[in-house]
Length: 390
Ligand SMILES: C[S@@+](CC[C@H](N)C(=O)[O-])C[C@H]1O[C@@H](n2cnc3c(N)ncnc32)[C@H](O)[C@@H]1O
Image (cartoon, rainbow, N blue to C red; front, side):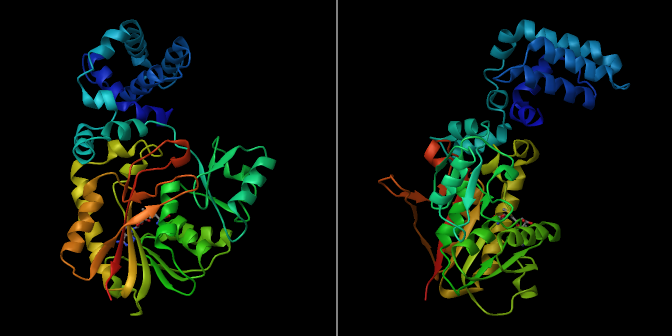
């Protein structure tokens, strides 16, 4: 219900403004928004049941009990005047798209042809995609194990399998033993694109909770250093590596201050999966859109640029740095990379391509917009591969 309320908050808030003579107290407002969101849900529960249960919820809390009749009256008025009330919101983008107005404006500027489908994708339920540990068996082997367990699934990437229905991880064959992990297809592109080779020195500069760290190690016996500033999230890197029986050096460190943790030996490959707005994964975290502020984007982009600049000196000539963000805003993707490469004659952005099974054309990768097609179901992400000239 909370996820649904976040996905329909723009519409519910605009309706509440029309239904309320003055703003209700915060807890009551939350209950009203939840009620409106349930009444707006595509697969609606019985309307009278929704209203009844919300009114009972209000009555069960002494502070809200006096307002139960207000809740009852406003929700029932919505049901009576639904069509007219919704029609009155037609020109309000925040109510229409359930995202803050600044976010919609930015997307429209960044993706004039696709902004509407990106916004619509944010309100879909995300799929559950698995990453098969290729050290333990092939995708074909794992599909057979899923079929045996009665779980329908489709292969959608070199190591990726899309489940027809999300499941508890405990229902997945071999999960506890490390045969498989949960990871979106777009996130799985990182290890494929960076393509580490056995014996290479690889840095994963923002590693926690370790999804991409593990995938890099599943694909090659490289010597990997995983760092992150957040000690509690680093614990999850340890847990993931342990479950998958993989080895890496894991250290707490700040990617923008390598002098504090770098031993001076250059890396052949660097992954910088930088902290960002997470605007590409709103279908998984529908509250992100309401928590971000417009000014956050420029602040995050500046931090991403600083990390890129600080890590460049750690890359061996001839080596590759893969810059990634799970963002759909150009400010946190191509603009950071353009600004970075413009001042550095030794930095050369290389095209990234993705070809998968029956697809005849290779997709050129950089800004991946969230996509729900069965064979390309993935979150929004940005990737840039930057080579250091010899
Ligand atoms: C997008 S997440 C990384 C996800 C991870 N690569 C994965 O695939 O599981 C970004 C991470 O950057 C970390 N971080 C933020 N600022 C950092 C900094 N200055 N240096 C290193 N890590 C940082 C955050 O703690 C967070 O874990």
